[in-house]
Image (cartoon, rainbow, N blue to C red; front, side):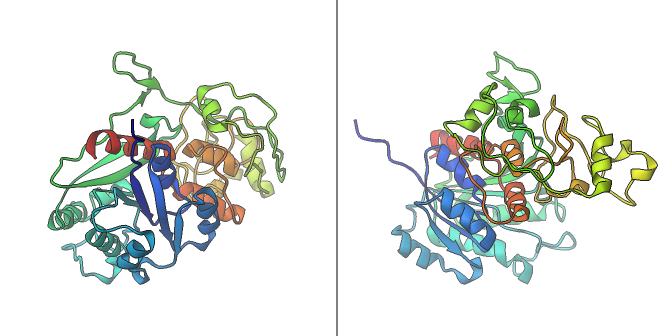
Length: 366
């Protein structure tokens, strides 16, 4: 029996590689990643040593050059994936695909046009689907139709695919040869349901409860407990050394806020003398062991930007804990400064969510 042919994927705007990692876990070969974030380059190239990395502005990189260097022809790439920034699209008036601000997305579509991949997956924030009275998503689908694809879009919640997080993201999935795109059904829910083959949501304690406790400014690189939950076992794998697990320095005021808050509490629960002058509703929030994490963002280093206080310890979550809540396993190591690592973790697509989509594409669509 011949060995199953591995599908090929190329990741544009790859960042640290959340989409790439999920597709790799689903059995794809990641042949290349492209990004202009020099701080994410070390993370990507170390975790995907066999993939070619293209640093720099996508507007200055020719798809024809990439194809020649990778040794592929139009139509041979199985999946083109990525999350292009789309802030150039106006929310007022008619959508203008010639607008200078749309260049990044237009260049992603230039790769689609030249490479002619069998499938295309684009990730972005949910508001992208309603900008300008839905003109944005209609414009994307129009371009795909023009290039010979059928496209669908859907907002998926990461927790429904085994990620211990409420994160919601919009996805566009396009297929060539006029095939009808579909998305994977959820695998997890608030309560387990054997009839529907649904597992219970992965709670925060089940995600990070085995990681060593930390004091402020402390870094720990050895495990002190055995993994107990299935998720912890999945994240730990055969790792014998712990990376990216440290507690950052906090101001005395922030330490006071942290010490005051109980699990699930946040900015509205602080006494008047600890209240900041202004703040986001989730700011200075302490996570609850019994629930899902709120969205882990690039600002997870800043307690004033979200719910990033450890459930039981008086500190912010570590980069490793943020990575666990994003479903990066412990062998995926983040590089550069702590600030950059937080951005890399928060900007990534959760690998388990990406894996679910990648597996569905492989098994049902390609």
